[in-house]
Image 1 (cartoon, rainbow, N blue to C red):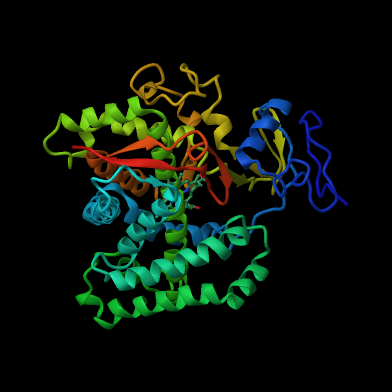
Image 2 (cartoon, rainbow, N blue to C red):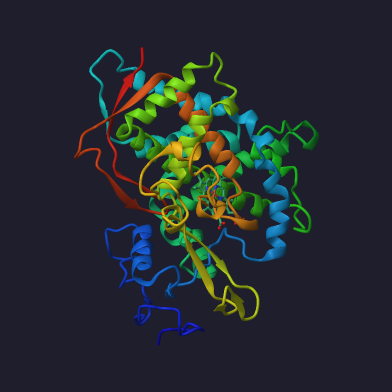
Length: 427
Ligand code: HEM
């Protein structure tokens, strides 16, 4: 039966697709140990910058495709994530980071202990941060544990596979969620919180969290604001979109620091120059390191756009209405044509020197255009606050060739497969 539709231009190379599965089995997206970004890179080596690929089309529950609905949501949500709005969350981020440092600190004085579950610890840290931001910075430890436990369990075991990748048609996705008790549990917990600020009355609401900010735009007619159901979807989307991505960046940061002690040392030197590190803007080298982590680590393999116009031509390449264009991010981030210093090396200094004025589209970890990542300012800010807080007190030391060998573990995001470091407290 395949292909559903062939390439418009015969000049675009492709691998002959298989019945039902397109190119997904042949290239190993379903059945191999490789991460998806490695598959994109191999196809690039074989076919060049442009090739045709048969993939089941996405149709996620929370991804909004309808433009008018998107605009209504974006008008309310995007301003909540502008830089000025997120700086007040600094204390929350510091407090959550301090908790993890204190946990490690219990072992201070003993020989440094190998921490082998840092991917999970980073996830827990960022989940705690986003829950406090979404609900209430003063949430009790018990409530935090309950919420993060439910969300985490759901995200790890059920949500990610069919929904994030969005392979299922909407109707099946909705049915799947209706019957999924973990999802229903998350929703039930959300609804408990949702009632709190409303019961206090609109004027009395202290707008310190995302949920109450969103609830102040409540509009069941769905003409200008968001309905309650939409608000719940948005909160869930923000939690899921926000914690795994950012925590993965943090895991890769820890891994690279353990492998590049000279970079870690330079961060510490920069921090020592200032008595007060709360003015983050002055920490230029920290910025470079975070940028390099976002360039070098394959956190998200690709993004996609669907052609909305009737048959169009871009740079002489014909694209049909409905065609999906996949943009493999790592292929750009590591393309030697766009970087003066070797893009296959981890070199934060590049952003201060030769690659300072790199081609902007050669590095798009948060996507680009009007559907680029809504939470990118928050993500960058969270990372910077956490990195500074960690680097003020601990040093990550390589846990050895075997235990800390890196590698890739493909889930929705790509986390380090083997990450284990010694945590040493600085004097
Ligand atoms: C290092 C952390 C993060 C990375 C690498 C990342 C990456 C991305 C990418 C690549 C996209 C697709 C953009 C496109 O197609 O052009 C995206 C979309 C999105 N991200 Fe992030 N993200 C991160 C953190 C966050 C956070 C913290 C939030 C919110 C709390 C968030 C919320 C979203 C939302 C809502 C979208 C969909 C935007 C739309 O469709 O209009 N992300 N992200």
